[in-house]
Length: 257
Image 1 (cartoon, one colour):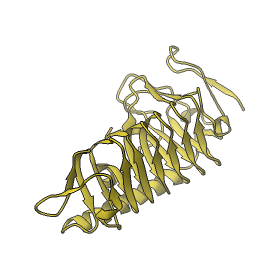
Image 2 (tube, one colour):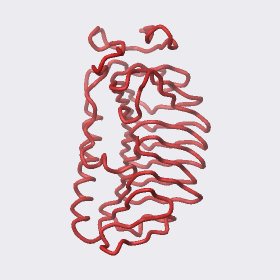
Image 3 (tube, one colour):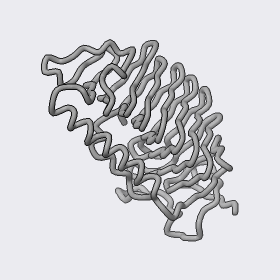
């Protein structure tokens, strides 16, 4: 069915199908309470802005603010960064990265650190994918372009596309989990806009396929992808790219939330 919800009267109307529980359709408030589901616990994966199992590649002038790492694959899988090993060989640095860079073949204790982080990433993906009783299902048939999404658990049996932008409206403690059985596609120039104090650290894009951010797209949130995260030229991410295969970059800016 079609339901119209209004966020604090001043925000755009929002359409979607949801279950019949009034407790699951809450309007964000000004206090410290949180609307939406419980946040996904990233564990030590939350220490990384980029984390993958099979590699991270970049071309062009990329800017990463935060740490990144790979495991179980070796440091040679991170290309385009001009890695400079620290004297301890427990991490490396790059002129493109404001933070430390880790790999499974660096000196102890880094291999254990990375094994734990990858395990935490996989656990976080399983948690996000396993949440039940969604507030909204099959919204827009998978095309959420132009919509305003309130806090909650969203579920699609397909992929999700954002053609020209989407708005997430809620308070600073509110949570969004967006479960998709297919790919996430953010078109060229599309923008994910946050309103009402919503924070990128509280948005979880759980992608069972691959995530593709188009040229100059601007995305906010934690991307938990079961496969590839691909960012095209000039795309930006305020959040984290946590991929169970690889991340590919082309002159992108990624900043920890």
